[in-house]
Structures are given as structure tokens and as C-alpha cells.
Image 1 (cartoon, one colour):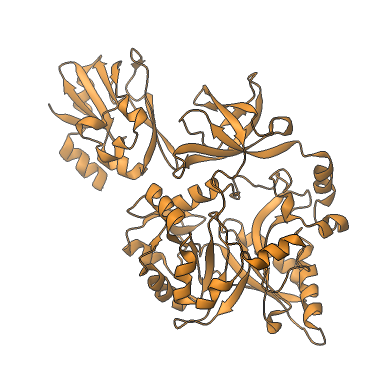
Image 2: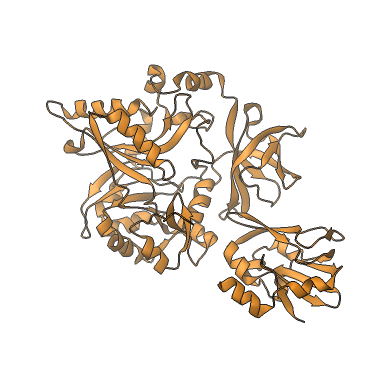
Length: 123
Length: 393
């Protein structure tokens, strides 16, 4: 299962036609202490680039964008009750935000792999 | 960033200590350290946090000529100059006392909020200590220079260092630098000699905690700061936690909770305008301000208690139960001490009573909330006998 990254610091891991989506450890560190996460409703459809979730630190609110188009099939309610999970395990298995059924898998091709993302955040 | 950011005498030290540096009011300042905002905030509430506030505007205003004037006459002469633009009782300051006040425009709106103090010793009479905010200091000093012209000189000290040491253990820490500073009462200041150079120490701050603000000559700034940071009770704290601490304490942030359209009465700062000034009605915007004291202002600053966990940021519209817009959030964030969102804002006065049900329009969703007292976390200021006596007068 390969992980892809967006320029807005979301990660996407594809398993079959279901993509698991979260924000990168780099993004979590930049945000600082996460104190609130707002997730979309299951069944909702998003186009690539739509704001689909909100993550808030003590100081500011940031949108999380849909890295690919599709339908939300599951959300990680654990983040709502314990938003600090985002800081503790951004890219880990517990830190995911949503699972999405993709409408166009080819959108993944344009995203960065881990090596390209590392170069991107260091530049 | 095209413009060169200004630095403080401590900027390099913060970079070396892992501070995450950001632009603030034209200065390169640490917004947080590796511990992060929440830990820094809680550390300050329990121990002592050290903040660089050198971007602010400390200054001393002194009469050019005190010939033939007694100490009291000299003080009253400079006090009257500053009372032209500040509505607090400056003539009535005790020696060494500081007051929080506002700089007013002719409509009674707030140009800035600031501290003003009267020196303790004989030779300081005819001289006032002022500390204004970073964002508006050029405009503030222009006003101070205009009113002082030909009579007094305002000497800026903002090329030096101003640090705040805040928290319940601040008093134990200050004793290691200047033992006698521990005897200062809340909202008073004095000069102190230390082994690392002379300093001006005020028992004041903007976190709701006991603490001190220390003015240090630039050349001694790193030495004194490093000396204080060696104490195991002290950690450096960034601007992020400074903001969450002041919001929990219900204190106004200029440019957010105060601006040129807002009067001190709307902001809940009537207590900063002493009785003698109200009676004399001799400050800018006095007619509006006195009318608002008598007949209530049309809007008032409120604290906001959240009934769910979604924070509401500055600019969030406040509605009443019927869905009518009644106001706006001016500071919104999260309280690390209470582990809930907190906010301040302004609403039409009829909705400003504590307990009033309101709605916050967060990303299109109405979130239930209630008007509450502005002090979210009780103040922990130092109470000495002299404070007590003063408040009885």
C-alpha cells in the first residue's frame, strides 16, 4: 500500500478503491497542539481540493482538503474526542481523518510519493 | 517578506533555543518553543514563564526644567500633560504606582492601551514611565511628543529589552536577581541594582498571574535573561501562550478587542477612569464616555462560554436565539487550563447579561453558547497589605 501526499500536506493511502486520508506529521507539527477536529458526514461527496474537514490548534483553524474526489465512507470519531492524536500519530494508523471511496483513481498519479514530499517540505 | 524584520536584544537567543520565529508587529519573535503552546501555557500557570516583550514601547517622559518646583509640583506638571490624552488619574498616582489606562481619540475611541507609572524616588518626580503596545507605538509616541513639546521630553527605551516573568513562582525567581523586588506591591515599580546591571522592575503583567516586567539595557539583556532561564522554575514562553494566557484572564488585546471605534466603557474598562477624572470631564471623548457611564453603551464586551467543543475565532458572527446578528467575536481560541474553547466579543448591550443564550455562526453552523464573565481563569495577582489599604480609600 503506497502513500501519496498533497502540497496541502494531506496523505492518502489506497487499499482497493478505498483511500484512507490524514494530515502529515509535518503539518501536525506546524499546526502545534491540535485541540479540535471537525469531520464530514459519512455519505458526503467531495471534489478534489474541496475543504472537507477542519483541524484547529490553540491559535488557529485550518481546512483539510480532499486530496482526491469521492464519497466519505467512514470517519475517525476518535479524533473528535481526543484531537491530540493528530499530533501524536499524524501518519500512524490511529491518526487518519476519513476513508473515502474514490471516483477517479487516476487523480492519485499526480500526487507526490514520500521522497518527493520530503523534498517539497524541505524546499 | 520584503521588509527587514526588527529584532530585539534577545532574538538570537530565542532562535538558538529552538523558538519558532514569526513576524509580529514588524519584529521577528518566538511564537512558541519546542514544548508547544499548551505546555508553555500550563507551565506559566504553575511555575514561571519568561516572555520577550521588547517589541513593546517602554519610555520615560521627563520635564525639561524642574527649577523651582517641589517634588509634588513637578509630578503634577507632567501628570497634567499626559492627562490631556489619558483618562486615568495620573496626578493622584502614589510614588512607585502604575495604572493601566487607554489613549483616547476625540470620539472617546481607544488609540492604544498602556501602562503609566510614577517614579518612586525624589529625583524621579516630574518623570513618568509608560509602556505602550508594539503595533501602535509610533503613533502613540507622536502624540506624546506633541503634548510634551517644549515642556518635557519622551525618551524611548524600545531598543533595549523588556521581559515578563509570570506565574506563581515568579516571586521566588525574582529574589535571585533583585531580592528587594519581591517587596513590590501589585502595580508598582522601582529601579534595582543587580550584579548583572541596573534594571527597572514592575510587579505587573498580562497573564492574570503574579509576576514582573523587567526593563533591561540592551547590553545586559542576554546575561540577565540567561541567568533567569537557568532557574529550574523558568521556561521561555512564546507569543502563542502569551495570547492564550491573556484571553483566559479576560484581558483585551489591542487591534482585536480594542480599536479606535471602541470606548473604554464598551470594553468594560470603566474602572480605569477614576472618579476625579469623570468629575472633571477633561479627557478626549469625555461627553461620549460619561454618557455611556450614565446611560449604558450600545454594545458591550462579553466573555463567551461554549456549549460544545468547536472554537469560534475572531470575526465569528454572534446571533441571538432568533437568528438575528447581535455582535462579533473579537478574540477566540482555546483554553489550555480549562480544556474548552473560550472567546470574547462585543454584543448589543441588551444581550450582554451573564447567562444570556447566544449562537456562534461557525462555518455556517449555529453553535449554542452563553454570555459569561470575562475572567475565565481567576486572577492570581499578588495581594499585599498596601494594596488592601489603597483599595479602601
